[in-house]
Image (cartoon, rainbow, N blue to C red; front, side):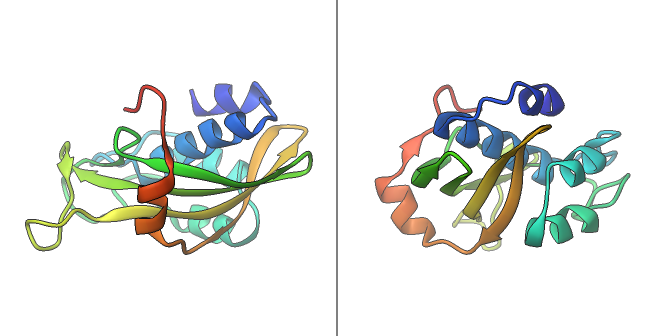
Amino acid sequence: MFNKLRAEKNFTPVGAVEFLGAYQQLSTYSDPGMAVGARDALIAASAGNVLERATALPSVGNPFGDESSHAFSLYTARYVIESAKPDQVVVALTGYLLKDGQPSSTDGQHGIRGGGLFTLTPTDDGWQLVNGATVDAAAVERTGSPFSGGC
């Protein structure tokens, strides 16, 4: 599904957000056996400093080193389109990580937020994520738009 979304080449700001959401979900998704081909799909859609993150993912197994399932929740995620030009879209994104379907927590109370400030560029193959940086997650949560339909 990730490769299909990328191949659609929806080179609009909303298309960039949809692709980024799918990228975040796939890059944080892990069950004890990670989906075959997920790492390769992420590498193909990555450049710059996010390529390092994608190549660091294991090709099999769980990158979290446990027997739990993990995911990035679009249901709670928020985003802000920081800038949009024909050759580049910059999106701030934040959302919560899930562990075994529940908000992941280090202290049993406060959820762990994931996300960042991401730069995407259109290519012949579809969107490519070319840079990721830290972001003020609380600000994005306050002012950002929710994903339509979440999940």
